[in-house]
Image (tube, rainbow, N blue to C red; front, side, top):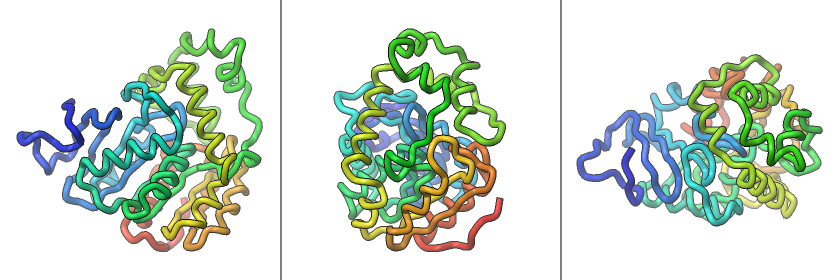
Length: 290
């Protein structure tokens, strides 16, 4: 790992196929050739850039894939603020430091709020937006699994959170999926690093962002192509709420049959194909049938 202001040091090869750095308060992984069109991937709450792992090899054949661990998540240090706009500002500073002038962005779950805020803050920078399992508004949230309710709420949450086993973390991820998934050890380690107070704060800030104004309303005010991908069996957000994005001009909506909240793990080939086509053109591509 190297630390920079966002630019590789003189000895670092610009053509590196994989590298990591700590820049602008975030752990950043780069995959694919640096001269390829950039594609930014943002994870959801309590996760890390590692959640995109299954789709990265296909994406990196055609793009300079940039994955960040948002502040306080994965391998990134804590931040003074977890406000969605503040996080988007850090991401914008990172991209500016990399010399990125136009980028396709994708956000998973609440990562979709950060990429939307990025487009609101810097419309000159964001070329297209892909949202994967991003709840449009609070009333689309489904009753959460018992495991989540116990771990995330007082009085037991603060006591149990630091004592989570690897098996518990894997059960938590599986509870959001409709298909069996294998979660790598490094992703489990990333999830273990987030603290209870940080996650509670992140969740509050995410809720405040879409309570203030729904995601479809925000996107409808932007002149940017939008791809919305939902699992048709998502247990976290009502799958039919994907059609709330119909109000967004230039929006395309894809429902993946038999898929839950984490399409990157549950249906990586179809998810990667959708992202590749959209990132390459920013316009409609033929639908994918998993």
